Length: 510
Image 1 (cartoon, rainbow, N blue to C red):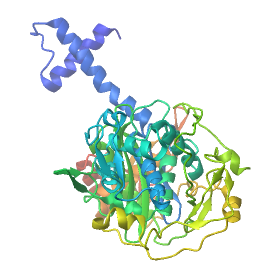
Image 2 (cartoon, rainbow, N blue to C red):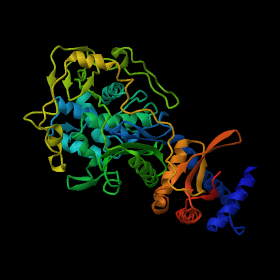
Image 3 (cartoon, rainbow, N blue to C red):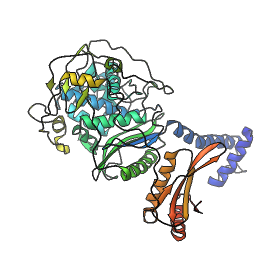
Image 4 (cartoon, rainbow, N blue to C red):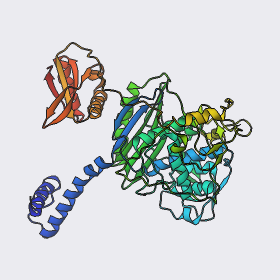
């Protein structure tokens, strides 16, 4: 179709929908141009959303993957980056190099970064305690830079620390270039890697991680609210971090504790915060139905090491492009992680199983959860936020144990591979079914079934499900169906779903 033809169709559509494109338009060329622009604008978001969308959920108790869509495709993390920034901050506090009342100085570089930020002036200072809260709630870019400069001497060196830590944690396809998540085409991650980071965070810093549930904090006469609007609205939501840039879309890394269950999930690429949250609710709702209350996952916690001296040069690792996927082997610990220092002073926590850098000292000292007088890092940073001091003293493992287990960390992700599709046994004896869609992916069919069940729990709560396949145009489609229903129940349920804007079809069993 020609441009003029598309414009005519666009004007007709605009007239129908909004009263635009009238034949009486005095500026026909302007109307045509406007119609084309609107048509292209309306057509663009779904394409962008599909290219940047990814999602994953994992049962943190068992490590079972409950949902995965484009989980290994490269995505831009945006401010999810700050979760790794805070991971390294917690390590520095664990090592005693940072304290809650340590003051961070705002440099001219930190003050000049784009929002979101606290808008502090060069030369201003802020305590570590307040700075952590600013990262969690305000997602302050200037504070992220201030942390990077204080810990590593420069943001570039801190980004190198972040990437090395990512490799040590098992995040094989993540590269960091800054501490804030501001746009950088070389700063990419995956849904799987972000879920890995979240699980490692709760494994290593279970008390410190409670700060991510902070809904607001007061600073300099201002009440700063957390960008995660699902806090307090989705039962059990206790973090972790939102993120947004124009190219990444709206991201959310979430953690939910409910009724003994713990689910970690991530969504990338929402067209809006509302759309992202809606998608997250569906994924979490389904995951919580499947999650276990029994904790069987083995925790793999990483040893903290001191960073290289501020004056030491830092070699940039090879960039990871969006279209590329990096791989690594696990036959040697030295091949997993480039050493940060030739001799590392290791701070051992409970269940720590690996190391990040060069040679080992024969002397291993206990650093956490006991810190200066028997209180944990968490209790000293946020005593007024429901954090409690830790009094348990874990036994330190010898360096040889940590060294021996470092190599297998890459091959030991904190969660299990996605299982084969499971179907709920048919509960009823009826021969009527409801089909709610046909999808190219099993995960999409499961999601639609979960959404429909939540929309009509009284009628479909105990219904069996099935996903029979059909080949259409050379493509295999999974038909999402509720089965074992009697005709009356099926008709009522489908009518209820249609009122909820969910398409459905009542059919007889095949």
